[in-house]
Image (cartoon, rainbow, N blue to C red; front, side):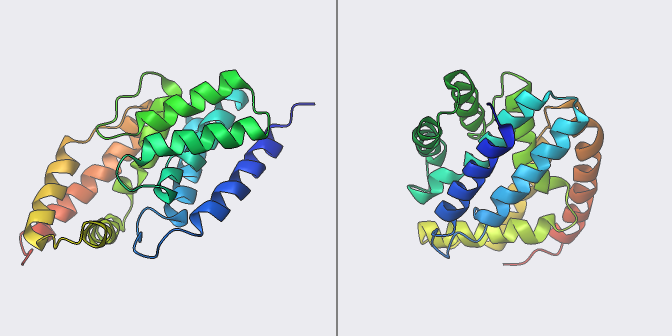
Length: 201
């Protein structure tokens, strides 16, 4: 008998174990981020009227979307699809759904180019943090992560400029993202712009 919750639980347990072993320098792309993206997917899927079957697919994709960091930092999306394929095959997840999971993961590669509603939901969930009150602190966690991964110092002013550019250029894909998250993101853009005026080296 098909059990959606059982599949999701198995994926959650597997990815949680996998991401718990990530190096400490991944202070942004970690288990906490993945869990937040999963919850954001649930929220967006619910408000998008997504079916139970499609919601299952996008939730599983959310769990795997950054799993590739266990293998490589750059190009982690492709690495994540390999991990997802192997595990989902092992638990006998339907092949037709595996392909949709894989496409969702690949769609999050920057710049994202989602082709359907499932891919749009995951892409918006991955950028959900742009709408949160603590966006700025999250941004600097990402800066710290990139500095340690690349062994290169990123000047604060340069990072501020790039973040402003990113916030201005980014667009959500789903109706929920455009109606709800975009408004909150624009509030962050205004707040970030004010703090950017005092951004020092």
